[in-house]
Length: 238
Ligand SMILES: [Ca+2]
Ligand SMILES: [Ca+2]
Image (cartoon, rainbow, N blue to C red):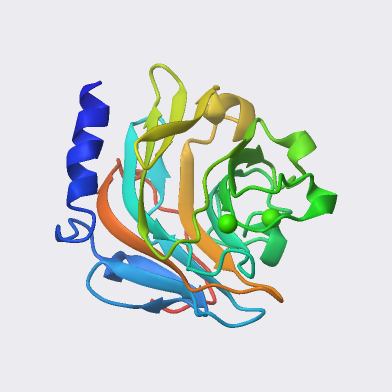
């Protein structure tokens, strides 16, 4: 309950509090650009754009992490696409974009998607939705959580998102606009990443024939850096 109260307070400040982590701590790829002190525009409102922002340090999943950000999914609802995805992967790289939400084809990986475009062949519901998929399998038949329909996210507003990993309880929580949208209990390190607790995380967005500007605004990041940082061979910009 305290967590939700904290989130409620944070949401009041979603547009005014200064970021405690910096947009400078991300490596940008594709169309991603720094918008201001706390926001990165992943895609402009243009067709067939894709952008990524990877956090520069690998994190240790044997320790807790907490990501508090605001998502902006643009303001085209009927004509909007594709959404924003979070990726956890041992290497800093982006999977197939567009409907692939940035994690298609990445093995091993965990992806959390905030999908605003219905791809029938992927089993997408008509509503905007939240889901967790693993190992780059993006069809919802392979979702380990969801797809959970949510009300329209393409309203031009900032949506407060809290992602929390508890390595003791082995619980991954996704809370969007104060409502729990995913609650995954799984031994991610052992069962998904083969015992390797060191992963990078990044956020991606894409557009297709339908478009939206899509931003991420950094509020607070709490995590433990992996003791040994893997080498990064990343084609994007610092
Ligand atoms: Ca989709
Ligand atoms: Ca929508």
